[in-house]
Amino acid sequence: MNDENTQDRNEQADDWAAALAGEDDSGGASAQPSFDSPGNMSAADTTAAIFPQLSGGKTIQASNEIDMILDIPVQLTVELGRTRIPIKHILQLAQGSVIELEAMAGEPMDVLVNGCLIAQGEVVVVNDRFGIRLTDIVTPSERLRRMNRN
Image (cartoon, rainbow, N blue to C red; front, side):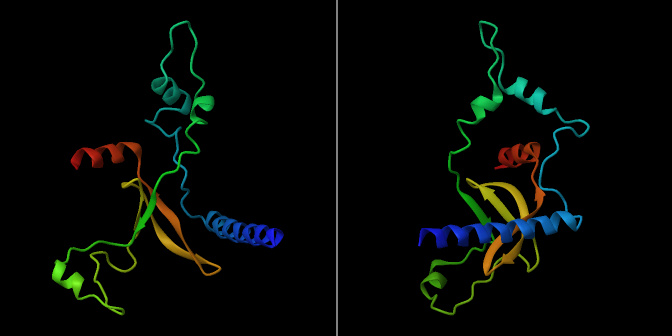
């Protein structure tokens, strides 16, 4: 029984990998941020800025320190749209009711981590499962600007 579950998970992972590989082959935009583009700090400069030198002449190893937080779970949300409706309309909702959202059909969906917008993307379906293909990554400077506005 466990072998069947493992095989099913491996097949699903292969299907998702094939779908993602198809995006890369078709010339789609890469979802990886570029640290070496002009005007941006390199990864080494960023590490030095985040982890200053400690007394005693030792420097914190970024790769060792970041490993400590890689397993921390965060809430990932994909938002289709929003709307504001009065409570009286909420109380009238029944099976089959339709709620109109502010977002237009075909608009990119927002991807939020712990309520903070990090990317936008489009819906994809692979083997009857929904996913999201990231089309735009929000830069760290843009995230800061958005947080300061709120």
